[in-house]
Amino acid sequence: MNKILLSLLATTLLPGALGAAAIKTEPTIEQVRKDEPATWYTEAAAATTYANATARDPLFADTKVWSDDARKAAYAKQNWPKARGMVWAKPGVSAKDGWDVSHWLEDGKPAVKPFDENTDLILPASPKGGYDVSLTDGRKYQPARFRHLTIERGAHVVGHFAVSGNVWIKSGGSVSYLDSVLGTGHTFLRNDNLIDRQQRRSLSLVDHFFVRKAPGSSVEFVGLFRSEDNWQVESGMMVIAPQSEIGLGNRTPTVIGKDAAIAILSDAYLSRRTNCDWSTDLTVKGKLLGGLPERPLTSDARLGIGWKSKGSVLGTKGGGRNAGPNDYGMLVNEGGSITVTTSNPAKARLVINCSKRDDDWGQIEIISRDHPLHGDPAIAKLKELPRLTDMIIKGDVTWKGILLDDFKAGGIQVKTLPDLNGNGPAFGTGNADKPKALFTVIP
Image (cartoon, rainbow, N blue to C red; front, side):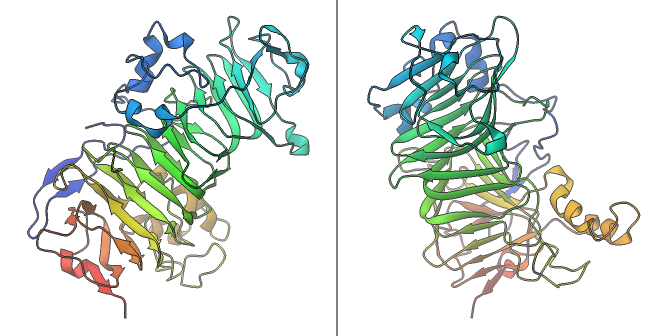
């Protein structure tokens, strides 16, 4: 069991349930924990062939650089047409106008044509220490787009840009303001670093991040990622690879669009960075998947959604960024669905529970605009509330293979009660009541 994502997951039995899970420690973005284990993607940097692998030529057959599971992924089977390739001419030398053709080599010679959406870029490792390259002019919000991007040790890429191919942030590399992934085909976005430039756990891509892949296309995230505000999945499929983690933004609610899907694989973790107490944390208009038919769950995957105060401390005014009675952890709309594909529904499940990350900074910070953060008794009461969540299910759910934890009594609203005698969900030890009492049938 990977401790990065499902740290110390303890299992016991509950009456009428398949099993129970209790998360003893929660990964935060503040720092790498002392017990942080190595993963296959961080260990890959020690391979002698690692330096030769790029987003353009990933060397998928190399067992020291890619895991066996990765070779099963759709991105490992994707064939790419030939395209232009450009390499930063002076590794170690920074530039605020990195879009200027004078900084690049193409086929070993000075480039004469700027990069475009069909160009692959490589920022090589620096022999002189770190360097920063701005690929767009942030003052003019000058967006850019290209295909594959490789960022090697010492290189830091900056700029509001989109990619239609693979992105590989190799050990010691970094990126800021990667806005979106789009285009056709199956791609990966791999980060081989546990911390970012601020020494915080996971890599912050941008404040507002968007998945806009074409129908039938996908992007798979390998490693630890987060956004600062907003993470939307508008079209195509977003896959969270085994031993990987995504912390959704701490303010704007996430929506899985009707033409989109999120798949959480074995030992992967998707969560809100904080609770979104003024709105529903996650709305599913499309598909939420635990495992895939070709890669069924072999161990628990996990979805963490925020806790809900329902305005019990500061009132139920609702609207804006005030807590209200109609804010939920998750809403599955009519037409939306949750499906689990598992090798063993008793041991390899999609765990849906309450995220307890980062001391709920999001809600506390927002509320403190009207209530002093220090000394206001309302803030102290808010912090003392039980961290429980809720959800409304109007769409279709495959309950077998799901484990529910940290839910309020009556907090799961459904059209039809699931089977509670062995062919439905399992229940954790953190729920507020017995399994049947957790559900409310929607009139």
